[in-house]
Image 1 (cartoon, one colour):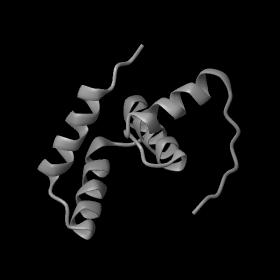
Image 2: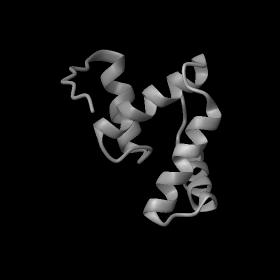
Image 3: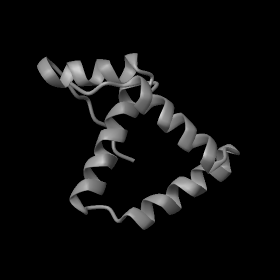
Image 4: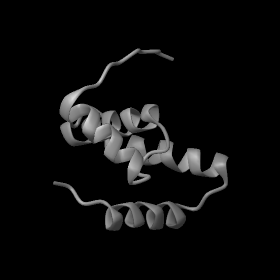
Length: 83
C-alpha cells in the first residue's frame, strides 16, 4: 500500500469537490482512486478484464450485486453534469 499527501487547488480542487457534491465519491481519497483507475483504463495501463475481475471480487466481499452497482453508476451519471 502507498500513502500520499496531496494538495489540490484551482480546477483540480473544483473537480474533486464536484465529485463529492454529486455523491460520485464518498471521500476525497475515493475520488482520487476513481480518477486514477479511470485514467488507467483510458490509457490502457490497466486492462479492463483485470479491473472487472477485481470489481467482481470486491462486490462478492461486500455482498453487492453488479446490477445494483450499475444502477448507482447510472444514478450518478443522471445527476452529474460535466461542464
